[in-house]
Length: 172
Image (cartoon, rainbow, N blue to C red; front, side):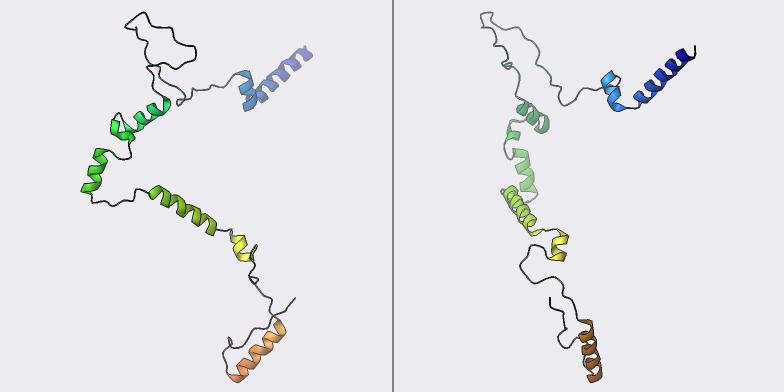
C-alpha cells in the first residue's frame, strides 16, 4: 500500500513540476496557438465560368480572379483609387498647392545621404576620450608635480597669473 501511494505521489509531483515548464506544455499540446492574423488571406469566391469549353486550370497556378499580395496590400493601405499608386494623387497635389507647401521630390535621397554622413562622424565615447585609433597627440599628458609646484610658487612670488608659463610634463 505504501509503494502504491509513493508512486501516485511521485506521479502527481512530476505532473505538477512539468506543468510549470513551457517546453513541456508545448510538447504535450497543452498550449493554445492562435492563427496568425497576417497570414490569413481571403480567397476569391468560386464562380461558374460563362463557357464550359475552358481548359482546366494548371495545378499550383494562381487563380486568375485573385490579385497579387502586393496589390492587395496597396489597396488596403491606399484605398481603391487608381491614382494612389502614383507618387502623388490629385487630392494630395491640391492640398499641397492650397497650403503653399514647398517640398523637394528628392528628399529620400537627401535624408539617406545625411544619415550615412552622420554615422561616419559618430564614434564611440571611449574612442573620443582615450583617443584610440587616431594619429594625433595623446589625449592627456602627465604633469611633473615638483616642477609644477616650483613654477606656481615662482609665479605667485612675481605676481604673475598661474596660467603663465609652460606646464612641465613627464616625458616617457
